[in-house]
Image 1: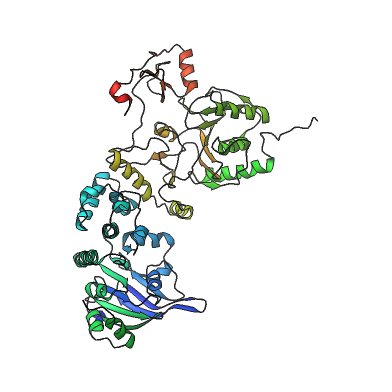
Image 2 (image 1 turned 90 degrees about the vertical axis):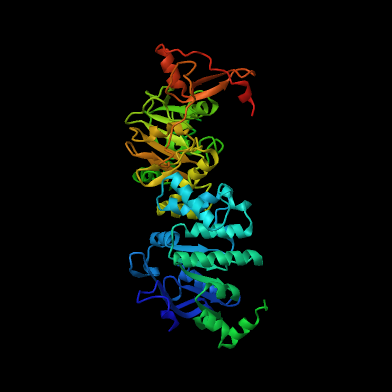
Length: 265
Length: 295
């Protein structure tokens, strides 16, 4: 099985079992199950309205599933059902062990406070109380995401779209999370900026051994970043497997359509 | 007509009871903002409607009331609130900190140490310390509930990044009893240490925002800071021109249009008490240097 590729006998980082979400008669997601191991990047692709974002919200405990459950292996090694966590624990998890990269950086950043404070906020939230150390850490993270450190005191609203997105990534990774959720991380950026961002994300993910769940409608993003892929349509996973395998040899008609509708590069 | 126009201390008894309940709850949970059904008062918001309601609720016929505005007993706001309670409650009023049992204040804590049995009532414009960083009230309440106060340090971080030191000089955030982060109303940060382990009961009333909070006597109040940028008081480096005090918070008073100025105690009662006991200042502070006069 492809799922057993990335790990050597360790328990999965995240387990989704029979996840479903309905709004009255409207089914947004139905019966979705998978295991995610640490260091593994999973792409969720599909067209608009296929339930990708709903699924991501359920996985990141922002939305309560109507059916099924999500379990996560905490830092102490105990796998727990997300629904059983208290709000305080969930929020703590969200700003320490998890990252969430929004499509629109304005959602994930504080646009009016400086870049340094944006990166430092998570550190201060876990009790860092030394200005010099917070600033040094913020500086080194700006370097890692290729932002000129002389811009550390500028607010992100003065940044370009690509810089904002990189700043958002730095802000999320500063607490060394083990799992990062990305919702269309390259959406709305021009192609050259996208390429640079993807390159950066790929090297960070492999350097830090991050696990990531990337929602995208861009198959190129999926191919570059992810090890495994799930194709969604109408709220269901219609095809899943190794990224290369699925993209090079799609079995489902819909996946074939998706793959063939990529413009030749 | 001989019937009294007002109930004792203006507010009706049921309203006072409601406010007292909020006060009791606030005292039980130091630093926690308790919502209350703030009433319209015969003065505009921003003139101390919250403080006046708290004072009205705790005032008894035997109390002696002192009202200060920016440390002063003789500004419009202070005089009108003092008159208001002299008229509606018939309580005796004073300008002496030591003689007062209830002190309503705007923007200052008296210099003289407060004693047990005294109550200090603050007028609060904005009770939420996280307001300007997180505009969503639902979110700030949740942050208080879960003690997620990292954001408060973001504000201090911004100060240092921009000015090289913590430039917040008033409404400086404090942590009360090791739990709730609280806005001490716009008192200068010079006054923050006086809140810590204070013998008097401190009550905070925000009329427009409909919140009451409290610091019970002898409660720990810590000003937030960074290890490498610790909290520091600020005062002008001068003695008071009238009483010579070198430990009081000073107002700068411009005396002419050629850079002349003097520094005097902002707490008028403290200054007068010192003058009465023979202390004298040196009248005039060093004038502003020309090149600093206009930026």
